Image 1: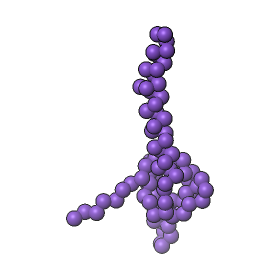
Image 2: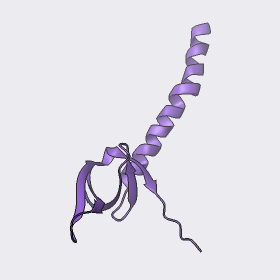
Image 3: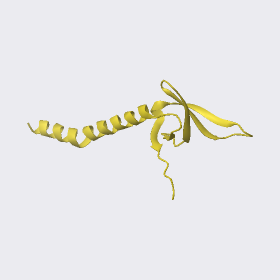
Image 4: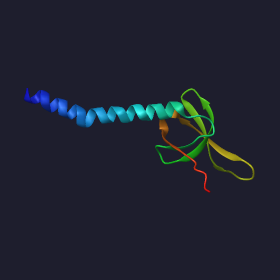
Length: 88
C-alpha cells in the first residue's frame, strides 16, 4: 500500500508534467508553417522557408552578395517559435 502511494505521488509530480510538456512540444513541431521564425534545440535561429515531411528548410543568414544561407533540419529539432510583436 505504501509503495502504491509513492508510485502515485511520483506519477503526479514527475511523469505527468513531463508527458504534458512532451505533448506541447510535439504540437508545436507539427504546427510550424512557412515564414515562422523558430529556435532550434541547438540555439540556431531561422525562418522556415520550406517543409518536407519531417524536415524543415531554414534561412539562417545572409551569404556573400545576394545569396541566402539555408540549412535542412529535422522538425523535431524545433524548440520554440518566436512571436514577432509590432512596436507602436
